[in-house]
Length: 355
Image (cartoon, rainbow, N blue to C red; front, side):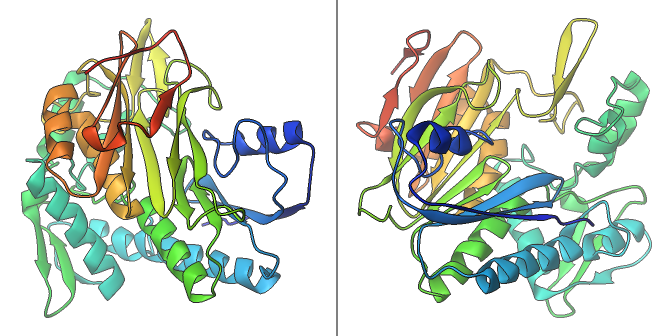
């Protein structure tokens, strides 16, 4: 595991410079479109195979605070990284079909949360997707369209019902050899929640936490107004938005076909995989953005709801308390759940809002 720190402090930079910094990852996190004169302290980390940026809008923020955030990220990665053979998840995967593996209460809790989402979505969200992730290699150095038989073999190893948890012994067991847990669709959200919890404990209530596009806006901006968050245009490069929404103490997480993908023979293969057939999900959606109080929930739901599709996913979100969503389709239609009415502003006229 490799973690890199880049500390940056801004104070009354020109609006254009602040705007560019805010668009660095994928959202207008913590800045309005017309810029902001608020000062902040920022540090970026490279971990979870992505850039994590924490911006704290409080003069009391110190190097010690950012160092502790780095330790929190390192501890989570050391427990939950699938690519590390020595992590708890790595050990669980190495012992698939052999024996249960003792894990920390933290890892056990997150695995249980992932399994709860798998149950609620009938497997559309499935933390045992590891074998499929491996055969496709999307996001890695050599993505490719695997042979059909290889896809079928990996899909057969993807089944959340074969994960057994013993709460008394704090163990996790994968019943079939070759199975592999992958918490990538929930762990970043969990890490954001952990960071926010730490900042609140330090009385630092105004911050933007960005884990590779997973945004958690804590508190309000220093002037007491809500944060302005831009929603990524799934048809364009990162930093191009279709609209904005206001948020405070909320997480905004998107999943879409633009995040990680490769092209082969004119076909786009993206990283959100259908656990039934083993191929990238194709249901007319290009992205789903979830707005929720918990970043853990928002992270898991963005993948779940995208996989459920435009109709079933919409109904699922409407059934949840404190959760909203923005759906964008291949034909550039935008649909929002009822709780976002009056809060989301469409700014790109090439997209059309629908009921």
